[in-house]
Image 1: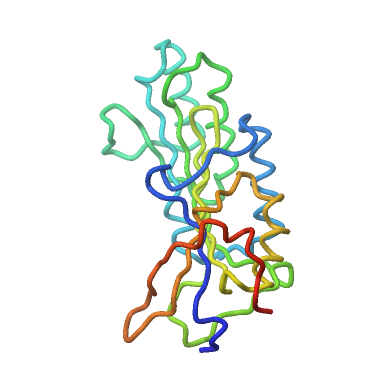
Image 2: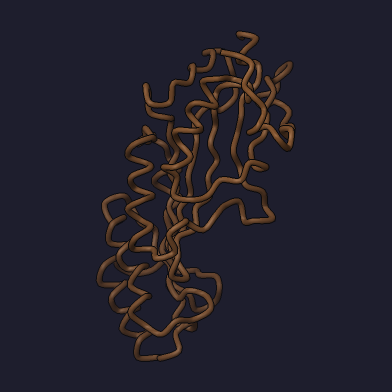
Length: 233
C-alpha cells in the first residue's frame, strides 16, 4: 500500500445526532430534488447492492392521526398503492410495506402527502431508503484504493422521509489522507452541493488495517484541520 494512502478520511455523524442531519431546505418537496441532484452528480450508485433493495420500508401509523377518517383513507390509499402490509408490526397497530425500486417514487409521494393533513408530533408516515455509492470520477479526483486494501471504499447515504422533513444519514469515504490536496480540493467543491451542512468535527482519520483486521483505527482530526494547509499532493 502506498504510504500516502495509509490513512483515509471518513465523514460519519455520531449517535448523539442520530447519525445524520436534517436537510438545509426544510420543505421536503423542495429538499428532495437537492438530494437527488447530489446523488446524480456525485454518486455512482451500486445498483447491485443488496442493501439498496432490502433497506427500504414504508410505515404508516394510524394511531398518530388525529382524525380516524383521515387514518382510514390514508391506509386505504397505501394498500391500493403497495398491497397488503407486512403481518407483524411494531409499534402495535402500525402498518409497513417493503418497497422495491419500482415503487420508490410512489412511496416518496405517499410519505410527502402528510403535508395535506393536520400536523402531528411523529409521522404518521415514515419512509426510508439507503444508497451505497462510489464517488463519480473524474469529478472526485481521488486516487482509487489498492486492490489489496480490505477497507470498504464505498460511501452511503440513508434518506428518511417523515415528520414533514427529510433526514439524511451520510457515511462518506474519501480514499486520501486529510492532508491531501486532492481531498481538500474535492471537499471544497463538494460542500456547496450537499443537501445538508457538514460539521468539521464529524470527519475522522481511518488508519490502515494491521494484521488480519479489515478495518483500521479511527482517530479524531485536529480541531482546526480545515484551517491547516494541506501538505501532500
